[in-house]
Amino acid sequence: MDKKTYKLLRTLTHLSKDLYNLTLYTVKQHYELNGTFLPFVKAYHMVKDSEPYKLLPSQVAQQTMKIVERNFRSFFHVLKERKKGNYNRPVRPPKYLPKNGHFILIFPYQSFRVKEDRIILTLGKNFAEKYGVKHLEIPLPKNVKGHRIKEIRILPRYNALWFEVEYVYEVLPEERDLDRSKYLAIDLGLDNFATCVSTTGTAFIIEGRGLKSFNRWWNKEKAKLQSQYDKQGVKFGKRMVWLLKKRKNVVNDFMNKAVSYIVNYCLENGIGNVVIGELKGVKQNTDLGRRNNQNFHYIPYGLFKQKLKAKCERYGINYIEVDEAYTSKVDALTLEPIEKREKYLGKRGETWTVPVFRWCFNKC
Image 1 (cartoon, rainbow, N blue to C red):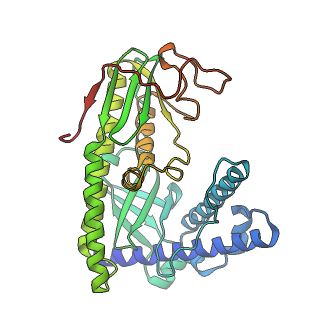
Image 2 (image 1 turned 60 degrees about the vertical axis):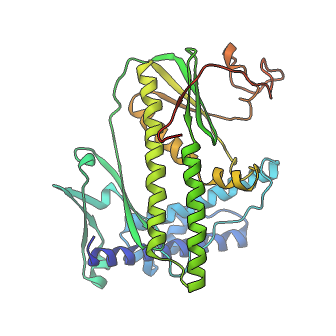
């Protein structure tokens, strides 16, 4: 990325941050005065004449405002769960972004065009008048060529020290000969990252100890480096950037390999359904001791599930998330349905020993 593009992205992501904060302020003020939620369609008319909205491409600006709406809806959802007694932690509305911060840019398909091996992002008339730039060009990756791109996301990392580009595109599902009566159940954990049991009587475990060990090393290195920065009066540095990128690459590699192994296993055995627990609120309500809590919180199970869902959909495998509240007492060996009931066939706390195959992506 050249300096001109870098500066442009910093300017655009800073404007996106300004618009996010302005929209959030508008929604918060309405909530404090009226006690009700202000949806995007109404907030739009109150914000559309502001400078950050006018300088950003209109489609991009609206996507930023919609993120505020989603965040506030999540706040209200958690608030309701707390009132029902399902959540016992303090509930606070979305926070403002730092004054000198940056925020994501989302370009829907109407706001860009593809030209050979480049993507041309339209920046809008007002931005062009002020900054003298009408378009921004970014490369089109080889693996994305030929696909219908639905959305492009530009993410500022660590206060825009660098940027990442995400391409959201359609992939037509591949038809496979799968048996819809066969299921693979997945239980997520730490040492055993994914324990997988199928209705065909087979099972395997994807080891998580390598990832857990890496997280422990990473936490120590980060703490040591942060201590040095604090003594020097420095907030951030190149070594920290390297450390953060290192973790991202290692975790992504592990997740991709885990997902590929599970999906390939299903395809090879004709399994048409994958079932996994929702893990709603698990990280917030986990108390496994300081070290295990730290390990658990640094493993992005949400990313794994997101990748698994996308790959299952690509090959026509049904991806099913279930509430884990009822799974611990369900007897899988009798194929008991997963649902709330007065009496379960299984018992909580007992351990069944079954032959399993363990798979390690790194040396265990």
